[in-house]
Every structure is written in C-alpha cells, then in structure tokens.
Amino acid sequence: MALIRSALFALVLLLITPVFAAVALLVTPLAPQTRYRIIGGWTSIAMWFIRHLLGIRHRVIGTEHLPDRPAVALCKHQSAWETIALQRILPPICFVLKRELLRLPFFGWGLARMPMIAIDRAAGKDALAQVVEQGRERLAEGFWVVVFPEGTRVAPGTTRRYKPGGAWLASHTGAPVVPIAHNAGEFWRRNAFVKTPGEIVVSIGPVIEGEGLTTEEINRRAEQWIEAEMRRLFPHHYPAEAA
Image (cartoon, rainbow, N blue to C red; front, side, top):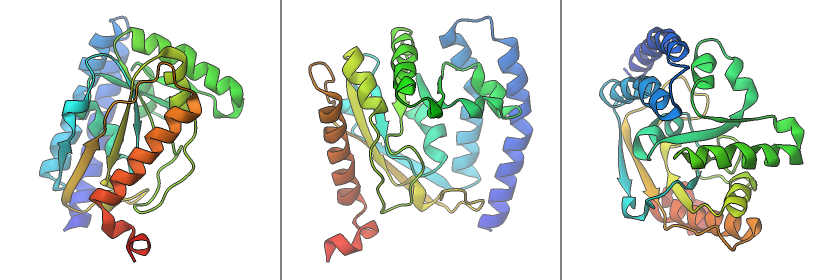
C-alpha cells in the first residue's frame, strides 16, 4: 500500500510541477512576497497530498519561540519533507541552496523565481560572502533564511559536522537564530521512493541572538540545542548512547 501511495504522490508532483513552473514565469515581474505566495500554491497542494495520500502528519512544538522579525533558521536535514513543510510552518522563507538546482527542468525553473539564496559551493570562502550578500537582501525583504548546517541529508540517529554558513550570516547581520529539530527521516527517508505513514514532530527552539556573538559560538549553541533535542524527543534513534 505504501508503494502505491508513493507512486500516486510522485504522479501528482509530476502533474502539478510543470503547471506551477509556467505560473512562476508569468509572475516574474511581481514583488518577491507576491511571487512567494502565488508559487507557494505548489507547496499547499503537495502538503495536502502528503497528509491525505501518504498519511504523513506533523505536529509542531515551540512556536512560542518564533521571533516577530526575520530570522535565520538552522534546521536538521533528513529528507525532502522539511524543504516543503517549513514553507507552511514558518513565516515566508528562502533557502540557501546549490546553484545547480536552478537548472533542473520545471522544478528548478520555478525555484529560480522564488526568493532563494543560490550559491556556488565550489567558491570556498567566496560562498560565505554570497550567503551574507544575498541573505542580507532577503532578510530586508522580510524573508526568513533557512539553512541546513549539516550540508546534506542525514539518516535518523546520525550527525554530520555543522558548517558555519547560517551562523556566519547571523553574526554578520545581527539576525536572530532559530534552531529546529525533527524526525522526518523516519517516514521519508533520504532518496527513498517509498514513504511510510506516521507523525513527524517538529521542535522549534529558543532564539539565539546573533548580535554580539561569534560565528563559532552561534554554531555551537545551535548544534548543542538541536542534537540534545533530537536525543530528548527521539531516544530510539540513539540506543548506543542510552545504554
């Protein structure tokens, strides 16, 4: 049954993505916030089918921690689910992503019309400059900036080194930092075609004020909170540590 539902979900995305890519081209002259709302219709449709077709629900805790001004969200990255769902959980957002994604047919073309931060990962330190330059613009436009500090999707129960891009942006702009933990990888695994039903818990942590802190300190505090929260909420993924 999960295989059939996953196949139908893939078909839904195959049908709606070219339509919204065309819509994205048509609304290019509009203001960024307006483009975000219109193109974001793709996300609303996808989330409906994620819940009602795939059977993947989600519950959010810690919304009282959300600041009333644009922030940098540092989020655990386990699947494609959070790249979709965060657009409905948080205020208007943009992602720091690889420039190559914008070249993907249909999906990338639509993505290019959204207020994203596209960087050249091969640029080394210049990539951090790109994040700050574009990130400052997005924050000024009222968008939150979402960064996956581990740089790639990781399996539940594992951790990769936290890279400094998001913390660097916060320390250079004074934007607050919001850490986010979740267990999406339990039901929507990395590169897995078949998704399984279940409830994803998304936990939003207390704000880390970026102003006056170094990049290293912001990164350390965010990693400390996220990894501790992962172990608190999902101890079954860390059996060796509980022994």
